[in-house]
Image (cartoon, rainbow, N blue to C red; front, side):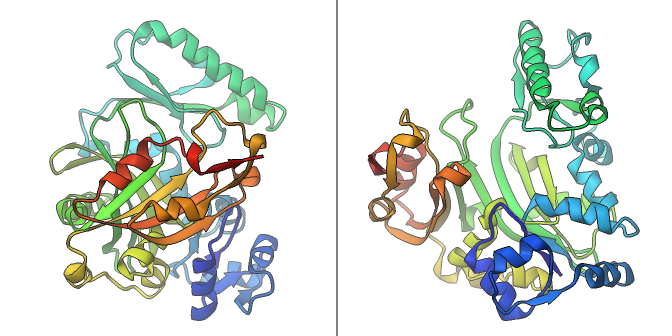
Amino acid sequence: MILLDYPYTSDFLIETVVRNRFPVVATKEAKEILQGRNANLISEADAIAFVKANPLNPVYTNSENSIAWIQQNLKDTPLPGKIETFKNKFRFRELIQDAYPDYFFKSASLSELGKMDISGFKFPFIIKPAVGFFSIAVHKVDKAEDWPSIVGKIEEKIEKTKALYPKEVVSNTEFIIEEYIPGEEYAFDCYFDEKGEPVILNVLHHVFTSEYDVSDRVYSSSKQVIDRLYQPIMDFLYMIGSKIDLRNFPLHIEIRETQPGKINPIEVNPMRFGGWCTTADLTWFAYGINSYEYFFNAKKPDWEKVFENRKDKKYSLILLDNQSDVDQEDIDYFDFDAIAKDFENPLHVRKVNMDKFGVFGFLFTETSKGNERELEEVLHSDLKKYMVLK
């Protein structure tokens, strides 16, 4: 069963759902997204009854927005509790604490931040909402002297959101303070099958321009990345599975490799793969693996076969966002044809409404070994040369 929701559902996901007759919960949002396509719609009432009667039935959503529907309608099932374990970053750290005994983390309410003595904390550290409820930026604290100004920024942001949320919610906002995790960053999609066995569907290297870069411009997958991290990731997933019963459960996970073969999670996103149908769709364009079908049909990738003809290829997901000094209102359109021509083998160009979503789109590419320069160039580009001004 699948919950389709905003902000974005790809044509590839829609086509997969329709072709396979996957049951789609007939929410208002799903019906709008499907636009009359001949999907296997089931009423919300029937969906609720079915999941309660079949708690191990696979459930997938393409968007965090649908979690509210699950929490509201499936209270009598294990799903809301499992989702909360991952969505609440402090609770998740508690879950895996014995696997990372030296890792520093602490929870604090908004009212406690200004009075907190951080002199004994390990620097640098990160502070962020324990649950991604507010659009508050994640802050890195390098030294104690920076703390008052960072707390001030957080309080200012909360103050601006008071009109949007009940007072009880704002005043009880919980934060997690945790040590900064160094190392190369990776993201992967996976699921636990009906028996609780983990299945890896892809692994992507999140490439940055520097340690201060926080953009999502380039994610790249390859045989080398998957071969090297496959076993450490499987060990990590088995560890999670030993602590919480996960069956027919999809996840999108971000990690850092702190030492060769040693990983530490940054974030675990339940019930879905990568946002905006990005990582799961790339897996199809790159490897011929339809992640949605693999999850619902309990299939596992045959990586040896996948890489028979792809040993020297790198597959990338490129976010086309505006990092230039050009204001959006001054841009007439983005030249997707021009940027596609600057790549050896563009696999798919995904155009989105910049005014609505804040990005131009996404590019899925195949790059041969020795031609990585094209990825380096787009990583450092502000993309201004592809913007046609008014």
